Image 1 (cartoon, one colour):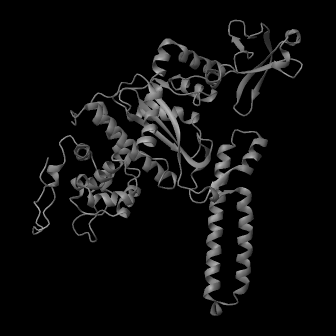
Image 2: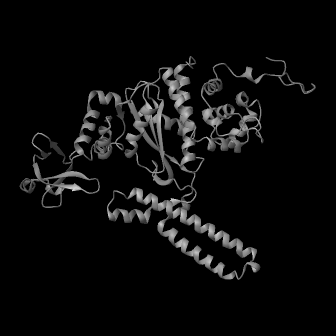
Image 3: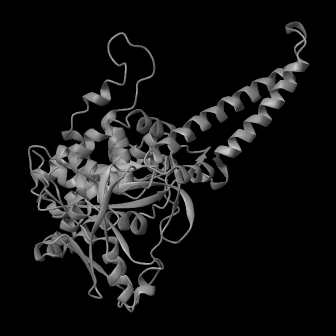
Length: 493
């Protein structure tokens, strides 16, 4: 047993032994790797944003490499708020590695991110180059997945077109009442003039929101029917706090303002090679664009030809677009996913299979439907063919389960042949081997952010700022995967 407690001596003179914080940090600490990474990149694009040199006056800006190191290491350390980063810069020894115990204010950190939001793409491309140098890219297949990130916006601030028109009418009426009180410039009342200025600003803000909302409605209704267009005009909203976000249904069933992020991931070390962020939930239309972006980012190293995605990406339009651009999409159909998740419900369901050999459709009850006509879908400009067999349907015992009409009529789009080829690749042995890796490769990033990083809501508003915020996370994710996969033996040059 010990004879006494081990306590500090309170009677000393308060002198402390000097400690070099650089010696506290281990050699294999992530902060050292991040500093090494920052020191290898070209920052000329960042430097062009500042007026620094002989004869220039004003306060000196913070060092670019220092700021980049602080921000990237903070996000690597699961710290996303500028206020938290500010506190860490003067309290924690690992941050002193960049700051030398100087306090970096939160507004400097936020201003730096906003100023260089476009330049962050350069750092992202450098992580891909570093991954290739360490042989962490395979190019066997590209794995894509999309998910929602809650926006920094209040649901009660959402405004429909009808609400904006009524609000504009009220504000305009109040402005006219104020204008009638103003008799002459000499007798202007300050209170009245302040109200006039306020109402004019409100009108301008409402006009901007109306313009933004009309723009979104035009984009969403360009290929829709008139009835669907009217429905969207009634229900579509624009949020006052974040105009670029949109109401989205989350996995828990709730509706919130959110952004949709799509990641394209290489399967070897789960390196993100391309990313896309939008306020609109439209995964399938961005499938080909993200694939092209991935190949552009990896130009000179390899090319992705096979793309694995879930059923949400496998639409008729996306299948045709991918094939036209020379990409092999491997994905199940939504019908396949429904059968897999609810086998009992679809066990005895009547099915239809197209035969290219004799241009017929055979139902599971043995009835053969022949081509009876053709038409063009104005919405998409695609040829469609009609198939039916009136006599066969009348004799069928399960006709009431199939249709309430006199006979079944099936409309087959020419694009379905392309989608069937996508589904056939998915069912093949090679397709199944590649697709089994998709869940881990494509979804591990968002799982890590939500579970380990506790990142459930964006801190910034506006599409450009949101892209910068999420781009920083992509950069630190790639660095994390490189540091872990290389096991400390990183090839920098």
